[in-house]
Image (cartoon, rainbow, N blue to C red; front, side):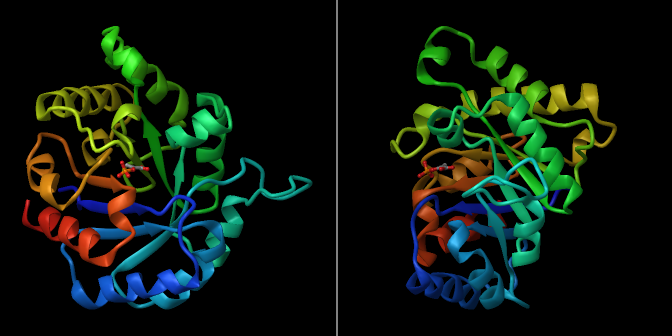
Length: 247
Ligand code: PEP
């Protein structure tokens, strides 16, 4: 039985004042059935982890370096995130793949570092619109999965997020058939490599909001969501969480 996961990605949004949203979320949903995670910018990880202590909300980073420490100005290691109170880290988000040229091999190395530090790696995959239009979606997803997920991955330490690049922040979502086609494919691909493949959580991400959450959560092999814009406000993210709990 997979425990569902509602994960929020605040991206480069939020200051100390935004921590009130986490308090509001925890107050409105003190004991959700699903696991709840918020990944704020690095500046807020420690403060959010402190505020969230003892409550339902877990805290994660949005990226980490593959090395444990050293001369890497501006970077943060997985061990540092763990030390700040994080339990998870998002890796290979399409914005990092696009803005920072992150390759599958780099994402895999970061995921290895995350697992070594005791963090759960939330590894993101997704095709561009041009790739989908060219009929390459499953090929792209298969190669990103093979290249980004390390051998040490297991259901307990790794979550896969399918995020079509063209659906992120656009208000557009794939059809439910398109989502289930990719999620069923991911489940089958994981089974080729991992003995506990059935236990891996598969999140959908891309313009999830309160109004479309329930139907997405009813789709086969969807175990939760990675939510960007709609995770910034407790009311919206709480509604998505409630839909996940009800699914
Ligand atoms: C994301 O950034 O991971 C994401 C899914 O964003 P949004 O929900 O805003 O589309």
